[in-house]
Amino acid sequence: MSCIDLHSHSTVSDGSLAPADLIRHAAQQGVKVLALTDHDDVAGLSAARTAAQSVGISLIAGAEISVTWRDRTLHIVGLKIDPHYPEMQQGLRAIRDGRVGRAAKIAEALAQSGIDGSLEGAYGFVRENIISRTHFACFLVSRGYAGNMKNVFKKFLVKGRPGYVPHRWAALADVVRWIKDSGGRAVLAHPGRYGLGGTTLRQLLEEFRALGGDALEVVSGSHTPEMTQRFAGLAAEYGFLASCGSDYHGPDRGYGEIGRIPPLPPGCAPVWHDWPEAAVLAVSAA
Ligand code: AMP
Ligand code: MN
Ligand code: MN
Ligand code: MN
Image (tube, rainbow, N blue to C red; front, top):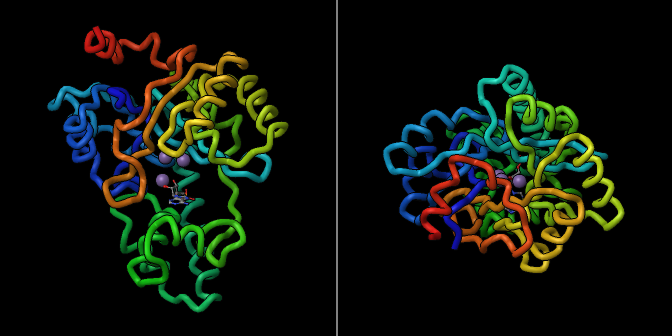
């Protein structure tokens, strides 16, 4: 169990708890330092900050930004970003606009497989701004096309399946620049999830480092213990800092509980090593 969790989602993207509810839930679970990292949007941060102050959580301003690198989708988590930084705001807005067009294409693709009404259906699950595959997944599960979130992705929403459409997100170089120029730290999210072979993975790590990337998400709710060990080793080898996050999406979304992640393996340099917001951890560990 970790008191610091640097990857979580609210209703602003595809989580099921509103920002303030997410913060209260995190506090109940014993989290002391939390990053809210909604997909491609920072709109939840101000409500989260107010709630965090009232329950004594240190809130880290974050976002999980969608990137296309060599025709693959990657996620870059920005931590301690300035959500008002204009280039960041414009960039995120463009990604969100791209999601709207993609959603229409997903709905067309599903209609070709005989599933009608999925665009309206998916929007029915959107609580704020972002339309994502998760919202299509909720619709498809609600109509009985699959029994749970995991199966609905496997059956309909991943490459090679009827509701998958290719999409071009932001460029890695741009996203790292928005994060760094806004004063933040750039973290490669859940590196074990991309299925990259050794050579491609090393090319990615080299490019990410050259662009100014700071850290790997060594501990992730979606990593096996083997992945955690592997990325701890790679972080040390490449000189990356290490981050940790549950990727919590709410109680009903098939992810792990908030804050319930193992500590960073020995030898990792925490991405929060010089953050005043994380000083509380040293106090509580003493
Ligand atoms: P999008 O950014 O719209 O492509 O949606 C991606 C989101 O779908 C991720 O952030 C996850 O929350 C969710 N997701 C992706 N793959 C799966 C899966 N296999 N099972 C459950 N949720 C998934
Ligand atoms: Mn998500
Ligand atoms: Mn992700
Ligand atoms: Mn995430």
